[in-house]
View 1 (cartoon, rainbow, N blue to C red):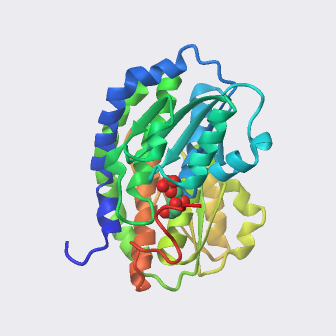
View 2 (tube, rainbow, N blue to C red):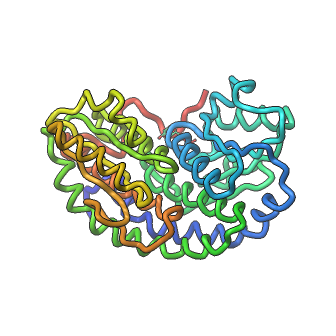
Length: 341
Ligand code: F1P
């Protein structure tokens, strides 16, 4: 494709990147299991900055759900500068995630963690020659997530998939990791289905406000998609937990609002009712989920495994809007690939 933004190619190639990441994961599986057996961690903390902080939120929620151990997602800057409000006295398993592996805040948070001897560090990144990939007891590197664009798309979903696989193994459920092999195919089908919808909503410049709703392990993903809309298309965009939308944010609904629901199966009735309220208020909405939604995965995968499928549809809407506004999605305004302090 000539004259196409690199971001489009990065979004479309996610299924292949996931397949390659799962191979990396399989090769490291024994080392990963070692962390689970005999691990006396009082808490698990996931960290990152920007996109990878939102990834940390999503990963922590899923890890706690699967393992039953307390898990939190915190920005690396907070871990570095506000250690007392971040850590307990007990041993911590810190999982640091970074596309570049060189974001200063993430490196400083990890360094401070190791110096204070708070526990063990696991890192996930995309570049094996960068400093973060040498800091942990276990360093997982996913080169298939590498990107040329500033805004993360393929890197985010690939690294996120790594944390899903980690959570499944740490929960002692390796059969879930085996099922992840079905995701690349489901991702391909999803992208084909979402592309026409993105081509419909992206260029609709009567829309001025975007709200992304996601709950439980999906809140971090809603936050990431909202960030994509901001970075790529310079649009007003905010994430909320599903039912929180009624507690104030819905005052902002007009006929220029689009509310995008990352709908679960377990709570679809409650979540869908929020979207129905939006329509009653004159706003527009669309839903992404396994079945009965505007965009449907129909992947037949366990709910804990399929969250990554929400991402490509939202990324494509942000990309199409960016292009329709005459912007360059590869190079967002005022943003660098790596923040170095
Ligand atoms: C984190 C990050 C990106 C953002 C921008 C600046 O980078 O905040 O999420 O898109 O590129 O850096 P990293 O630590 O994941 O490389």
